Image 1 (cartoon, helix red, strand yellow):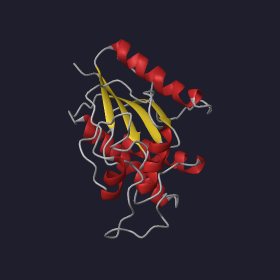
Image 2 (cartoon, one colour):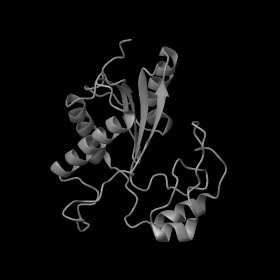
Image 3 (cartoon, rainbow, N blue to C red):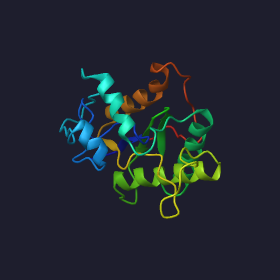
Image 4 (cartoon, rainbow, N blue to C red):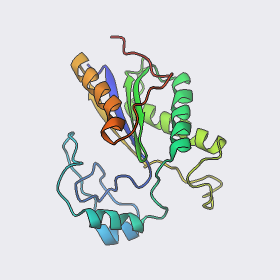
Length: 200
């Protein structure tokens, strides 16, 4: 039985659907990106492909074909994202037991929703909360770009990824991974007041 989810939320442009290392996407929506990088590089594995050998320069050049510049959250923006996650958590996410916001993606470990919501719905709720907070704080990365149908383009990738955690050991490993993620990237450890200790 699934006890919790490790949810990965990517910033816009972080991991492209035709990334040469592979992706979890099935198609490429942007014509310029498809023309330069080819079709989606769908993989079936649930293990990270981040360390696969690839042409790094080609991958970075692909990002110049995006409609908007890739989002890299600065310090105030990252704090705003966290506050958005915190607010979303008070609106119906049972328990966030780990959270780390990186410059171009975020990791959260969330206890299984007692209302039976799918992990995709929880992820979407967290993303909406973060986007709303960025707008309210005047820190939205696309604030200088013309709105589409009255709305700013989302600062997050259309989808995301989640790992289903079905044992206490899996949850402990995921929490450790999330807590160590900033440190591995040379950033300070992150401790957020809305994150609760995991209670089996």
